Image 1 (cartoon, helix red, strand yellow):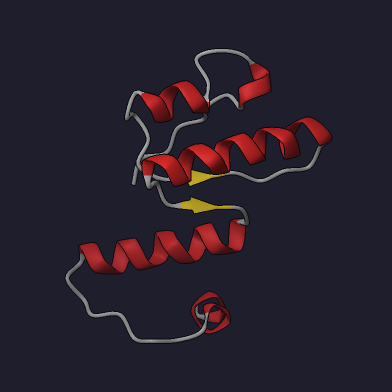
Image 2: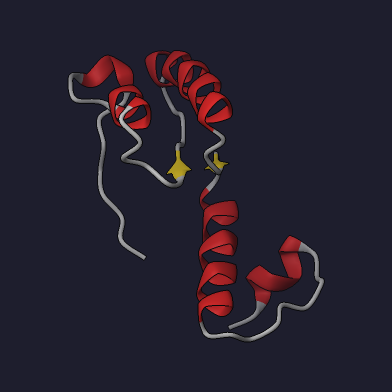
Length: 90
C-alpha cells in the first residue's frame, strides 16, 4: 500500500481537502494533537463522509486496517476477531 504525506487544511496547499475533492485520496489516516489539527479534523471528517472515503483517527485502527487489506490482497479469508485480538498477533 502506498502512503503519502498530505498537508492538513491549515498547513497550506494543496492540502487534504483539495486532494479529496480531486479524487486523489482513497483512504485517510488523521491524528490530532493541537487545536488547529482538531479544527482541521472536523473539516476532513466532513469531506471524507461526503466523498465516502475510509477514515481512521488512531494509529492502532490504521494498522488494523492495513493488516486486513494486506490479508485480503493475498486472497486469504479474514477471521472475525476483535481489534485487540488482531493487534496482539505478531
